[in-house]
Image: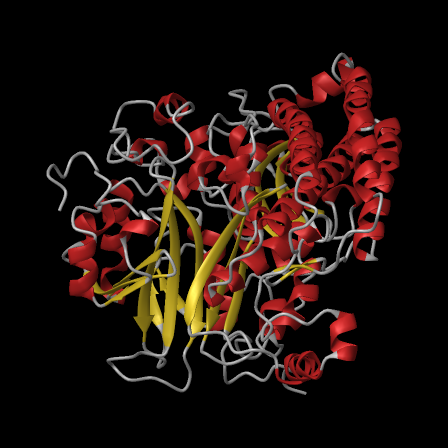
Length: 458
Length: 182
């Protein structure tokens, strides 16, 4: 119990990906990695809005000098520009110091999980785009993987590699949005313009591939929607060749910037134990020293074929989250290069699983072959039946672990679709990170956990 | 099957090639996964089990969910990923209660996840909160409470999280219309 769980994880770095079997670490008691024995769970629980208000009232002492002995309840959001959407925070502040803080969410709740239950499996894909709208391709992938698991579909290698390529481009795109908005919150507007310049290139690439800049619905059950257009790989390659220089450009503006360092270093501290206890995942967790990345540790969609490093930092603060994400963009660039190399060798391979009763037929075939026309008609009007059961897919999204839990009752509509988005759990870390710090630090911390309210509220 | 329960061998770990596509029933899963730490730690609590689509699902009685959470955490499953529910309306018998609460739990060291499910009856559904074991369950349990109306006993702030406080009904229940009440 007393050993440091982080060291355990680090020692496993080299025996990846599946060699944990028999390594002896598997049965070790890792409860030391959680809250047990460190501090009571109550201390780390995020309060509710009412708790904060009640807390403030109880801290109010009727005395001779009310200003000194009172705390104030401050409302922030849901329309505040630094809350990245519609997050509302209710803070109890003592002067400028945060005493407690409660996130109030739900302003963007659109009932997507309920809507999914009334749609055919294929019709759910466009809804998944709109959950975490900064990384739609990742959502598509996670949903497709879950349904493919239920159907037992085998996706061709080329489609898998294409998915990896698009997922990594999406990660770069998402991290660019994060860096731009995070820096803008701190006051560095130039970075925002630079980041969105590169993001625009990526969105144009997505548009060329899927027909849409953001809501592409390109990754479908059983493969991808279309053959990518001619010349697109060269275009991606030229973007990737230029991109490392751009990262250096951003770092040139930020790394030695005294304001940036002053606002980020030592701010928003969360220990590895607390990060695990509140369910934090993704770059935030890795910046607290927990070396776990689904792409490497529980590979999906052919990630085991790629060579990449998982950036980890032990800083636990906003600055380390910045460093980890910057490094992740470099790693993603390298994965994309590898994916393009692999794709160049497999032009002849199909992009869809071989399942005519599940996947829509080729347009040309549909117009010329009777059987394809029948399949097309049946799939569009009646959907396809999925064997009863439940399946969970898990992918490493730009914000952290994204799971799709799909339950089927054997009909052509999903019985239940549940999305576990990293943002929802990451938000629970906000109070731990902000307690005892200044109000201005809250803005820096929100930027560093990189939340998307669409993914939180669904 | 494992010679030494303290060191996992290939037979006790989730190795898809070593198992058939699906195994249903407590006894069959126990035999196939003898020595698996999750099964060893929950042996007394498991009421049902299945290995389906390369996922291990262990059913426990709702009264024992806290014990199960503590035991599975002690067995090395250190990370609570998700808490959600499924409404099997109109099924609601003591042998097949209406709500299924699903807990998805990951082990960072074993690189493996398991699902623990507990079925609760439809009449005033309630189950113990596991926030004392994993604070991460806080928002997830509030979400399930909000959208399914399942009460989590011992949860520190069980209030609606997505919907307004004066909302009528629990939308993810199957007897709640998709279009809502108009």
